[in-house]
Length: 164
Length: 164
DNA sequence: CTGAATATCTTGATGATCGAGATACTTGAA
DNA sequence: TTCAAGTATCTCGATCATCAAGATATTCAG
Image 1 (cartoon, each protein chain N blue to C red):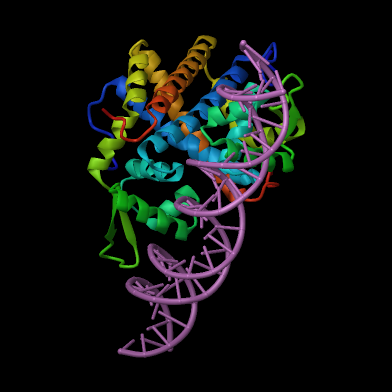
Image 2 (cartoon, chains in turn yellow, green, purple, blue):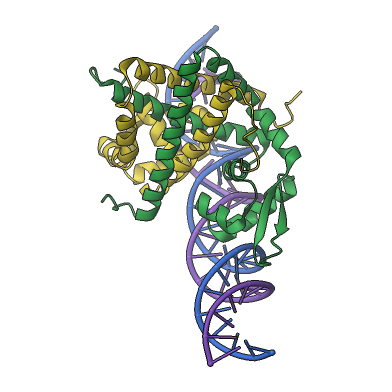
């Protein structure tokens, strides 16, 4: 009812999509606050986050996943390495490659910052039945999958005039 | 067991929290791709997004919501205004204030970019029963609320040692 | 061993962001 | 009214993340 969204009669599916979008906006804002509270840039936290999911990966792979230029990733690793979040490690089988290895103590530090959110979500989760929780987990996984798909689609289009 | 997460026996609540975190990472990456595909910076898209939810707000309020310095917001509005996403409007009752008014045609342009995701989520939603959809909507809303709460907590603490 | 391909790093330029101060307006009180 | 303090936005100079393009090092195929 504020002004932009909130039309009177929307279908449940539309309301779900709209609510997920709001969640997306909150998520981006939240991550930004976590980053600055850790003294990291947005991009740097995002990269640390990715590294935890994937485990050690090469600089090139990180460049692909984040969409950053390779030179940018070099500077990014420099910062994270200096701050102790990751370390470089030569790939013995291909000495051009640099593996980025997340450091464990840093993981704990970041986890501590995420903890209040984590705990709240766990607490929220405990208010559901086992079947409901499984539904929520599955839904979140499916939305994650959709987003990944969309990233590749949009990324494929590349330029801004791709519309047609 | 790739390396970082994936411990053997985690509770459903933990798995939910972990899955939501993955969703968060995807969300941030997705927003970034949308932004660059629209020729906007991350911050600019985020601001446009906020403006749709809130409707017209002052530059100062946008500064508070985004956490950006006031001077940064000035430059941000300049960019968005030049690109046609918003316009400035003097508040007649307080001429110091500048209302930032989202422009409608730009809304459509951005909505078009979000559309594939939106449609996919709607399609996904249609595979659930009415009760299940309501559960999902309510859950998303609750997580949004938790994040907003956390943003204020983190923001209030400011420095990184604020834990208590 | 040579040339092409690949992975990372370096460099110079651009632009977003911040902090601090400047400007313009409002409010409350004498 | 007039003044001082408070508030909202803007300006300016400095800093840092980012990009594009080229440099360097390594692998691989022949």
